[in-house]
Image 1 (cartoon, helix red, strand yellow):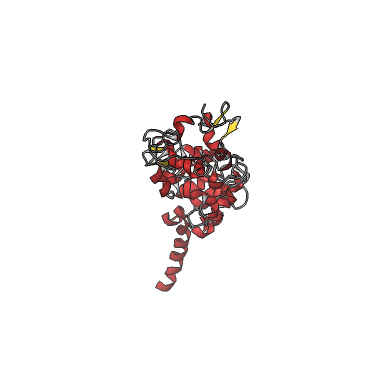
Image 2 (cartoon, rainbow, N blue to C red):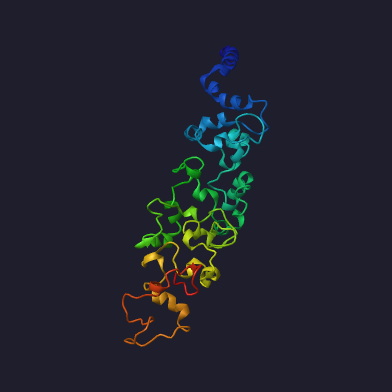
Length: 305
């Protein structure tokens, strides 16, 4: 008799089971992302992403990408514009293999993803020194947690560049240097990190000297009498671009030594003690004491004035 009494109890338990607290908590996440019927199939929307990624979602509101044009139709698919459709990721309970992750993707995959929008402004990136060295966009940029408001950089210049270019960092610590560490100029004033047609990512179309002469206009020319190295070898024939132990960023600590690299065979230098304008024994006499317009002159073949 007692065995048959258990049947009504099981019926009652089955009737009450759907209202138990455990089942009531399982439904909301599915209901929220399936509710947006106008959304493209497979997409769940940024509000669904925020349910798990609340901190990222909160910071992302001030990010320029949060205002970007949505490319997948439907409202609020900002996260998925970069990470891909999220329905499979959500339904699997957050399986990271079912969503595009910038942390686990190769640099090439990351760059392809970013260039799907930024190719118009960074068309040379794939052939740049950075891309060829396996540098990805997220090596320098942080979409979620940038430390610099400018260009979403992980760290502001020049510290960001110094993480790889330690030799350049040392150059800017020389006694005479361009004022990068002081904040007067930046690495990207002269270099385009996303690629150019010039060597060393220089921001110049043809004439590499244009990088220097945009500030040093006195050396720009054209001159009636040109100093050939300026046109054939460029500014770096005589100057270090980043820093130097020598005044004016010269590659030699003595002006005469610098000039004699090219002019030693063409000058008749006298022995010490012999009166001559080219007597090297005179301590305070240098080539530029007379050849003052060394970058070029409109008045004198020998750059005297």
